[in-house]
Length: 155
Image (cartoon, rainbow, N blue to C red):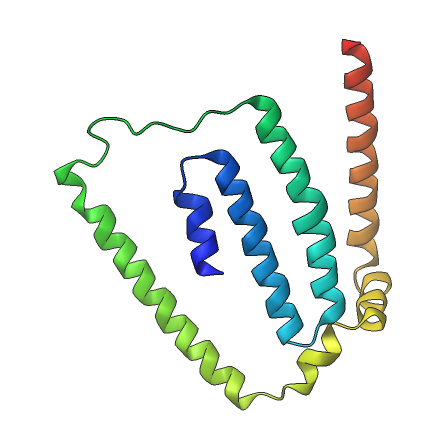
Protein backbone atom coordinates (compact mmCIF):
# COMPACT_ATOMS: atom_id res chain seq x y z
CA UNK A 1 0.00 0.00 0.00
CA UNK A 2 2.83 2.38 0.81
CA UNK A 3 4.46 1.69 -2.55
CA UNK A 4 1.23 2.36 -4.45
CA UNK A 5 0.68 5.57 -2.51
CA UNK A 6 4.21 6.75 -3.25
CA UNK A 7 3.63 5.88 -6.92
CA UNK A 8 0.58 8.18 -6.91
CA UNK A 9 2.42 11.09 -5.37
CA UNK A 10 5.73 10.81 -7.19
CA UNK A 11 4.48 10.04 -10.70
CA UNK A 12 4.36 12.96 -13.14
CA UNK A 13 1.78 11.44 -15.48
CA UNK A 14 -1.75 12.03 -14.08
CA UNK A 15 -3.22 8.95 -15.79
CA UNK A 16 -0.62 6.71 -14.16
CA UNK A 17 -1.28 8.43 -10.82
CA UNK A 18 -4.98 7.59 -11.04
CA UNK A 19 -4.16 3.97 -11.89
CA UNK A 20 -1.80 3.88 -8.91
CA UNK A 21 -4.58 5.24 -6.71
CA UNK A 22 -6.85 2.41 -7.87
CA UNK A 23 -4.11 -0.02 -6.89
CA UNK A 24 -3.78 1.65 -3.47
CA UNK A 25 -7.54 1.36 -2.91
CA UNK A 26 -7.42 -2.31 -3.88
CA UNK A 27 -4.63 -2.83 -1.34
CA UNK A 28 -6.78 -1.16 1.32
CA UNK A 29 -9.67 -3.46 0.43
CA UNK A 30 -7.33 -6.45 0.75
CA UNK A 31 -6.39 -5.25 4.24
CA UNK A 32 -10.07 -5.11 5.15
CA UNK A 33 -10.50 -8.67 3.88
CA UNK A 34 -7.53 -9.81 5.96
CA UNK A 35 -9.16 -8.25 9.02
CA UNK A 36 -12.33 -10.24 8.19
CA UNK A 37 -14.30 -7.03 7.58
CA UNK A 38 -15.72 -8.33 4.31
CA UNK A 39 -18.55 -5.83 3.99
CA UNK A 40 -16.22 -2.83 4.34
CA UNK A 41 -13.81 -4.42 1.85
CA UNK A 42 -16.52 -4.92 -0.75
CA UNK A 43 -17.73 -1.35 -0.23
CA UNK A 44 -14.15 -0.14 -0.69
CA UNK A 45 -13.87 -1.95 -4.01
CA UNK A 46 -17.29 -0.90 -5.30
CA UNK A 47 -17.36 2.72 -4.19
CA UNK A 48 -13.76 3.91 -4.25
CA UNK A 49 -11.90 1.62 -6.63
CA UNK A 50 -14.92 1.40 -8.90
CA UNK A 51 -17.09 4.48 -9.13
CA UNK A 52 -14.90 7.28 -7.80
CA UNK A 53 -11.76 6.19 -9.62
CA UNK A 54 -13.64 5.94 -12.92
CA UNK A 55 -14.84 9.49 -12.30
CA UNK A 56 -11.27 10.67 -11.58
CA UNK A 57 -9.99 8.96 -14.70
CA UNK A 58 -12.67 10.55 -16.90
CA UNK A 59 -12.00 14.00 -15.45
CA UNK A 60 -8.25 13.69 -16.03
CA UNK A 61 -8.79 12.42 -19.56
CA UNK A 62 -11.37 15.10 -20.43
CA UNK A 63 -9.18 17.89 -19.08
CA UNK A 64 -6.33 16.56 -21.23
CA UNK A 65 -3.76 17.21 -18.53
CA UNK A 66 -0.29 16.68 -19.87
CA UNK A 67 2.44 15.15 -17.79
CA UNK A 68 4.41 17.69 -15.86
CA UNK A 69 7.89 18.38 -17.16
CA UNK A 70 10.62 18.84 -14.58
CA UNK A 71 11.71 22.42 -14.11
CA UNK A 72 15.41 23.11 -14.35
CA UNK A 73 17.04 23.74 -11.01
CA UNK A 74 14.14 22.35 -8.98
CA UNK A 75 16.42 20.39 -6.65
CA UNK A 76 18.86 22.96 -5.40
CA UNK A 77 21.91 22.00 -3.34
CA UNK A 78 20.84 24.40 -0.58
CA UNK A 79 17.60 22.48 -0.04
CA UNK A 80 19.17 19.46 1.68
CA UNK A 81 17.07 20.08 4.77
CA UNK A 82 13.94 18.87 2.93
CA UNK A 83 15.50 15.43 2.87
CA UNK A 84 16.45 15.70 6.53
CA UNK A 85 12.90 16.62 7.54
CA UNK A 86 11.52 13.76 5.42
CA UNK A 87 13.94 11.35 7.09
CA UNK A 88 12.87 12.54 10.56
CA UNK A 89 9.18 12.11 9.70
CA UNK A 90 9.88 8.66 8.26
CA UNK A 91 11.65 7.66 11.49
CA UNK A 92 8.77 8.91 13.62
CA UNK A 93 6.31 7.10 11.36
CA UNK A 94 8.20 3.83 11.71
CA UNK A 95 8.36 4.30 15.49
CA UNK A 96 4.58 4.75 15.64
CA UNK A 97 4.03 1.75 13.38
CA UNK A 98 6.20 -0.38 15.69
CA UNK A 99 4.25 0.68 18.76
CA UNK A 100 0.95 0.02 16.99
CA UNK A 101 2.08 -3.47 15.93
CA UNK A 102 2.92 -4.33 19.53
CA UNK A 103 -0.52 -3.14 20.65
CA UNK A 104 -2.20 -5.32 18.01
CA UNK A 105 -0.38 -8.38 19.27
CA UNK A 106 -1.84 -7.93 22.74
CA UNK A 107 -5.42 -6.95 21.78
CA UNK A 108 -8.19 -9.44 21.00
CA UNK A 109 -8.84 -10.10 17.32
CA UNK A 110 -12.52 -10.94 17.78
CA UNK A 111 -13.47 -7.27 17.97
CA UNK A 112 -11.99 -6.60 14.54
CA UNK A 113 -14.11 -9.27 12.85
CA UNK A 114 -17.33 -8.03 14.40
CA UNK A 115 -16.79 -4.33 13.55
CA UNK A 116 -17.10 -4.82 9.79
CA UNK A 117 -20.42 -6.66 9.74
CA UNK A 118 -23.42 -5.17 7.95
CA UNK A 119 -25.57 -5.18 11.09
CA UNK A 120 -23.00 -3.26 13.14
CA UNK A 121 -22.39 -0.69 10.40
CA UNK A 122 -26.15 -0.15 9.99
CA UNK A 123 -26.71 0.09 13.72
CA UNK A 124 -23.94 2.65 14.14
CA UNK A 125 -25.12 4.62 11.12
CA UNK A 126 -28.71 4.94 12.30
CA UNK A 127 -28.13 5.33 16.06
CA UNK A 128 -24.93 7.08 17.08
CA UNK A 129 -24.21 8.74 13.73
CA UNK A 130 -27.75 9.58 12.62
CA UNK A 131 -27.29 13.37 12.69
CA UNK A 132 -24.00 13.39 10.71
CA UNK A 133 -25.54 10.89 8.26
CA UNK A 134 -28.56 13.12 7.66
CA UNK A 135 -26.39 16.24 7.35
CA UNK A 136 -24.21 14.49 4.78
CA UNK A 137 -27.28 13.38 2.82
CA UNK A 138 -28.67 16.93 2.79
CA UNK A 139 -25.29 18.32 1.75
CA UNK A 140 -25.03 15.83 -1.11
CA UNK A 141 -28.58 16.67 -2.22
CA UNK A 142 -27.81 20.41 -2.23
CA UNK A 143 -24.61 19.75 -4.20
CA UNK A 144 -26.53 17.67 -6.74
CA UNK A 145 -29.24 20.32 -7.18
CA UNK A 146 -26.60 23.06 -7.46
CA UNK A 147 -24.70 21.11 -10.09
CA UNK A 148 -27.84 20.60 -12.17
CA UNK A 149 -28.73 24.28 -11.78
CA UNK A 150 -25.27 25.44 -12.91
CA UNK A 151 -25.21 22.98 -15.80
CA UNK A 152 -28.63 24.13 -17.06
CA UNK A 153 -27.49 27.78 -17.16
CA UNK A 154 -24.66 26.92 -19.54
CA UNK A 155 -26.90 25.03 -21.98
